[in-house]
Every structure is written in C-alpha cells, then in structure tokens.
Image 1 (spheres, rainbow, N blue to C red):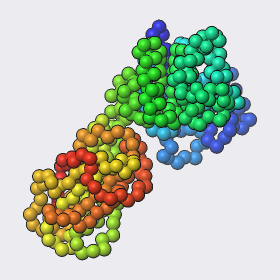
Image 2: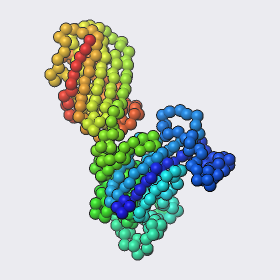
Image 3: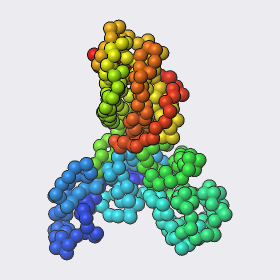
Image 4: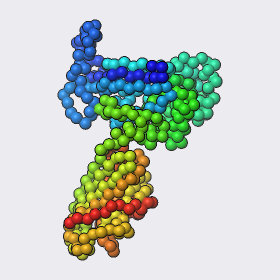
Length: 413
C-alpha cells in the first residue's frame, strides 16, 4: 500500500427502511450473536439491491454492496452515478461519519470532507473560530492554522463576516468558507460532494482550480462527486461508476463516462388533436441518445387534409433560460421528398454530434411546405441531458437557433 492512499475492500452498507436506528431489540440481539460467532449480519442475507425504481416487501436494502477499489496518492478520482446510486453513502463511510455493514477500508493520511453545507462547522461559532476548530480536528497547531488563515479568508471571500456566527451565513457563504478551510488546511485526502453546486459559477471555477492545484502541485488525493460530467472530465484522472449501490465500472474518465452514458436514451412522445383541415402535426416523438456526442432523433407525424404539397419540417432547441441555441430547417437544406402530394405520414430528423453541456433543454417544432408554415408546437417537449426527468416549460416565440445545423431528413407516407 506504499502508493495507495485509500483501499476499499468489499464495502457494503445495509439499511432498514422506515426505521431510526438498527430496528428492534430482537434484531439487535441476533446481530450481536452473529458477530460473536464470527458470522455475517443475518439481515444482510435478505437485503435487496438499491434500485429505487422497483417495489419490494423487504425491509432491508443495500445502499452499497461489495464495492472495492484503490485510490493512489495524488490521484483525483471522480465518482459518478444517478441519484440514489450510493455515492454519498460511500463518501460518508470514507469520512468515517458512518460505519460499513461489511468490508473494510484502509486510509493513509488525514481526511477533510465537504459533504453537506456546513459540514464540521458549529453554527454558534464565528467563521474565525470555526477555522481554528476545524484545524484542531485535523491535528494542526495554532501556529500552522494562523499561517494559513489569511489564504483561507481571501479565497472564501467572506472577510467582512469572518467574526459573525456562521448560523447567519447564507448557504453560499457557508460553502465558500467550508471549502476554503478543507482545501487550505493541508489534509492528505480531500473529499468533495455535489455541495459545490450551491456556489455561484465563479466560485465553482475557483474550487475546481484549487482541487487541481492541490493534486498536481501538492500531491494530495481528491475524491470528487458531481453530476456535472464536464467538471469530472476536466478535473479527474480516473473515475468509478456506481449503479444501484454496486460498482458498475472503474477506469479512465472517458471510458467511465462512456459506460455511464452507454445505451441510455431519453424518450418522449406528445400527441395533439387536429382541429383544422390544413397540414397539421399529430404527434412528436423525441429520442435523445446520450453518448459522448449526443444524437437527437425527432419523428413528426402529420396529416395533410388538403393534400397540396409534400410537408417540410424544422425544429429549434432552447436552453433552460429560453435562449435558442440551435435549429434545423429542412426548407433551407437539400431535402429529397416524394414529389407527389402526401395526405398523411411522418417526417424524421436525425441530428448527430451535438456536444451538449449538462442541463435542461426544450424543443419547438413546426410543419409547413416549400412556401409557408402551417402548424407550430412551441416548446412541446423538455428534457434534461443527465437524467430521465421531464420539465414543464412555458411558450416562447419561435425563432431560428443561434446555430443552423444540417440534419438528416427523411419522409415516409
């Protein structure tokens, strides 16, 4: 273990649903008797995997199960996975906030953790007092803390409130000071959860820069949990992918992110009542394939009561603040269609290599012909790049996106 900072061996964490503590007295006695005989927890045998999308009658669930990996000194390890995958539980075990049900961990060096807003802070103490308190917990002397004090305060940007009790801080101020304390008091291992999302964009950038600095320049080990895959890609040298409490994959960042996104597809379908006799949109189906370079696959079902001209379609993609970021209009691209009038059919557009950032997106679709538009559906479907949740969006005037992309358009009757 010369160059290994953290070794995790078959870690498991079993929870009893709906209970505070370990359950009944009888269950505690059964556990104690099993430990005396060197046996495993008897309730671990009936625990189920941590899949929050399924129903079960079991009272026990494995938040983590049989997770093993090594983290080398100076390594920046990204930990990714969907909500409920066991990431925070793993960090709490590594931070010794909670004990594992099975397995063991070996850690070389002092650990500083930032798992939740205000972790390790006493709300009644001032920012100054909490800096010295956290330093003492890490085993540092007053002189060592005092030498780092100015750097901590300067980085946090809360100098004006440093002698104010932290219970009066905003969540952003809390995180600023907590991160500065964790990063500058020289722990050998720094553990950071998604809590940095509380800070503003400028502070998040500072934090990522500081974590890279302590790893590259100081040779310290960093464990970083985030749903921001771009941040993981830019900061980390390797990553692990947790799924339903189990270790699904470990390797380089790019390989792990590819495994995380492999085969995942968001699928949405919206149907519309046709109330007029002209060309009209009947339904829109959107598939988003989440690979390293995303693909949009849009199918527009239409009906053309007048049977005048072959229909043509287009779409615009918006970000979360209703800014159009790209669009594609078949009217302005080479578009081979059946020259005969079509009364009913589908138009399909496939747009590849989008390179979307993580975030929420909305899509508007229009239907027309070579001369004019007949039907428009404004922001009818919304999606988030890193999850399977749909978001409600509000109407917005249809304008072409900032980038006009050439999609692969096809039509069928």
